[in-house]
Length: 498
Image 1: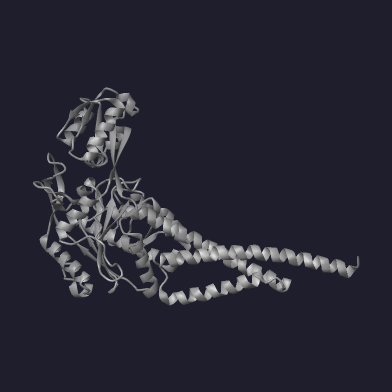
Image 2: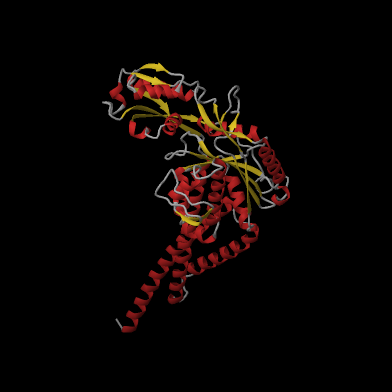
């Protein structure tokens, strides 16, 4: 065999290998890019003005596919085309994975239609009881309720230890009898446990949890649909005072109405103090602290605030302590401005100085929960919460944070964030933002009141700290929310009192 023939055979063999790689490359490019294109069109988040670029890029991909499948192109050119095609396919794969992550995230946070009420079997720290079974046949002190969750918790308890029950109509008396060893074990809900801990600073050092009973209940969706890109809508932001699973029922420490007008690009945050003394929806007799509405579920909080402000709440967003800590940390912290220097009562490790403070998640939470450092207590806490929410929104909507932290933000929010807003509405808002790229004006309104002590619907046998509403601040908030929804500007509507 001549040298020339050998060289020709070697060249033909190399060309065949390159052609096989080209076909594989073409299949990879075709599969990834057109699957990506299908998902982009299905999500419908790309504004029409950007779709031209998508179609131009689609034409380029078609051209690459044709070149990859033509066998007689020079080997060197084919190799370059293969490399470029692999790059495009890789980018398409990355984009596809991001879209799937996003779709999965929104499906999960929008599909949560249940709440979990947690009950605890408590005993003294120095008692012999280490787990629920140790209290089998014992007399268990209970604070009865008409709620279905309580009845289900009692049923589960009976299946577990077949107890005798001693009923109390006074939560503090129940706890006093445990401390004095007149009774050895008590059953309380998560909210009642928190109330006892708030009433006794040594609570955690005195008692231990020997059994946890979770009761899962479905939540009726009270969604009031809005054309979110054309008309104003209200979102209730509920911050529950607990760590762990977001579905856990608990007191709502943060109660903010976010009024959004998509055409005037205005957002108004109306903060309602947690201790506001209001009539819980559907109840008669004693009023209650707004925070206690959360114990009865998200719908009770929504309907109670709708009654208070005479508004429709279209959607809700539910977050807890974990949400705030993790979200602030994942965006690299936030910078807040404090008008007072103080050490938060919830976390003495955090030192807040007067002026600018760069805060991590734990200290942002401590700053949000602080009320003891201020003469106006709950009102100032509401203002701090509004500032933290505003700073998080600003940080998350910056292009730098979105690009570098996108996956981390989704992973952080996945298990610590609930909403009843439909996925399609969220996509519509994203599309509008990409289309117009508006700069949102964020303003704050605060409801106010006077501190007092009073009996409550939830705890009728003991006086608690409450805030008696100042009606003029409620009237002012109604005027601003109604005006923003009607398309007026905040500057037109705001009064000196706000």
